[in-house]
Image 1 (tube, rainbow, N blue to C red):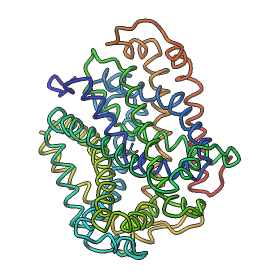
Image 2 (image 1 turned 90 degrees about the vertical axis):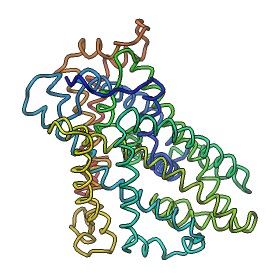
Image 3 (image 1 turned 135 degrees about the horizontal axis):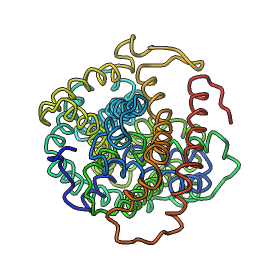
Length: 472
Ligand code: PHE
C-alpha cells in the first residue's frame, strides 16, 4: 500500500467528485433521448429499477474494492485476492476500458466546446444551418479545440486529488445544478411545454422490447460510471471512516435526478419548437439532437428574446454540457493516470506527460473519423455496416465492455475475496450496524442475480452490435 496516497478531504468532496464523474453527456443528452424513444415513463421505471437493484450494489462493490486495496484497478484485484493471471487480466481491462472511453468522450467534448466557441463568436445562426455540424467535425478547427480540452483536463488533474479533482467538483458541480435548474424552469415556461412533459412521463409499455431493456441497463451503467475503474480508483482515495453505502446512494440519486431533470429540459424545448414533432425520427441519435436540432430550437427563441437572448440560452446549455463532460473526463483519465504513476513510480507530472501523449495518439485519429481522413472514416465493416474508427471504439467500449467489467467485479468480491470479507469492508466506517433489507438483498444478489443479468446483457450486446442478431 502506498503510504502517501492522497485522499479526498471530506465526505461531501467525495460525493461531489463521484457525482461529477457520473453526471455527464450520458445524463444530459443520452438519457432524455433514450426515454423519449423507448416509452417515456415506462423507460424511466425500468431505468430506476436497474439503478437500485443492479447498479447501486455494483457501485458499492467497486468503491469497497478501491478503498480496501488502496490501489488503482490494475492492481486492486491482485492486492485483495492474491496473485492470479486471470484476475490481473480483469485489472488490465479495468484500465484499458477507461482509457478508450476517454478517447471517444474527448472527441464529443471537443465538439461541444467548439459549438460554445461558435456561439460566443455570434454564430448561432450558422450552427442552426443543416450542414454546419458535418463541416465542423471534418475541419481542422477541431484540433485547436482538442488542445483547449487537453489543457483544461490535464490542468485540473495536475492539481492532484484534493486540490485538483475535489476542488473542481466543489466549484463546478453546484454551478451545474444551478444552470440545470435555471434551464428547466425556463423551458417549462415555453409555449406547449406541457405536451413535452406528458410525452416524457406518460408510460407506453408497448415500446418496451428486449432491446429497450438491454439499452436501459447499458445506459444506467454508463451513466453511473460503472465498469470503468473510476469508482475503484475514487474508492482508493476514500477514508476508512466514510460510509460507502450512504455515499453511494447519494451519488446514484444525484446522477438519476440530473438525468431526469435533463428530460424536463429537453422534451419541453423540443415540443415547444415543433408541437407535431415526429419523435421517432427525432430520437434516432443523441448526437444529431444536440448538434443539429437544438441549435435550431435556440435560434427560434430570437423572436421572443432577440438574437443575443437566444445566444445566451444556447451558451448556457452548452456550458452546462461542457462542465458535465469535463468533470467526467477528469475522472476517467484519472484511472490510467493513477495506474501509470503507480506502475512506474513516477511523479504525477511525469505521468501526465506520458498519458497526454498516449491520449493524443488515439484521440487524433478518432477525431479524424468523420471525413477528415478516409482511412479512419471507413475503418472497417461489421454487422452489415461501414464503421469508422470512432464507431469501433464506441461499440466496443461504450456499452459492450461495461457489463462485462461489472460482472467481473461481482464475481471477484463474492467468490474470490469472499462474501464475509467484502461485507466487513463495505460496512467499515459506518456507524449503522443494523442490516437493512437492501443490505440483505446485496448480500444475496451480488453473487447470483446481478452477475447473471450482467452476463446476459453482455452476450446480447455482443450478438447485437457485432453480429446484428440480438438474442432478445
Ligand atoms: N457518467 C458519464 C456520463 O453519463 C459517463 C462517463 C463518465 C463518461 C466518465 C466518461 C467518463 O456521461
